[in-house]
Image 1 (tube, rainbow, N blue to C red):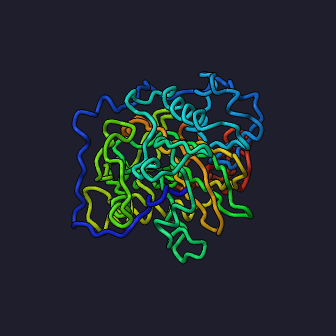
Image 2 (image 1 turned 90 degrees about the vertical axis):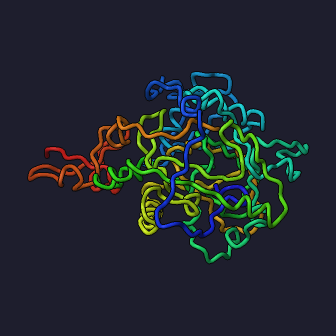
Image 3 (image 1 turned 120 degrees about the vertical axis):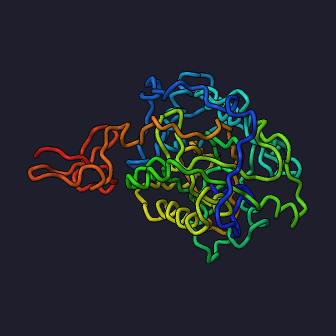
Length: 412
């Protein structure tokens, strides 16, 4: 989904060497994950009908109603683990109300070790200050972002027009990475899909983005940080006279109107223990890679985004129906909306806040954790004579000539 209203990028100039944004003083411990190590599923959801949407990312439960498991902590914990492993999980025609959605958003993080100080995010463009209701009864709630095509067209029409000539790939992002404490899980329920067709959302795996890097590039990325910046909220304030939330936005570290934060380029997801490329997306367009020249920063930013836009096999695309719902892990997934429709599209999004992003040198890549080999030529140099190339999927079946880029060698 595309970001609410003005969560978009603009070109910016930068100094010769990119500066470093310092972490908020005194928050290093309180904002850390409370997990001692990765979590495993207990299998409590195994009996539910479900299927992988692609080999790399996405799982769908075509029949499960989340309201039926809302008070079952074991199943919710397993759901959180599944979301972190598969990136995004889809549910059809859900009956969750606003309070249920908020409860679920906070609970997923609590059950997987988020800091006690991390709650639900309050978006800087306040619903209540703009009088935007989250339900038909006129309820105002800043912990729910109303994803509205009408609001987005108001603030940034050139990007949200179905006739736009801008590159659609510019929309890829993870939610609120400009905050010192960004999101872990996000939940979007589409209340009103476009009347005819269009408005799909795409997600891409940050785990697989990392695994597409060559070994030397991995080492480079693991030693870099990046400054994420979102200048457009201030622009909206100045242009349209909208009030912004400049105090508490769901965590004590998320205050002020800078909308700027430093995070590692490669991030470890504490739930899986897997590495993800994190310095990707339009919220880095106005930011930069730290400690390198402006030119080097632009080259890296462009290449990292190309890893998404030029690798459709690490993406998943979802066509929304009324009341369909998606849950994704913003620590290791990027997403973008498809603005190919004319009418109204609206939904409610809840964004949970997680831990301060970190990189653990002892963490593994997704392929390493699943016992898969890296890209052909990276580690194995192809297969020796008498050995065939095999692609193993997550459940152990094998496909010759598959293009998901997860090969291993096997004696014929």
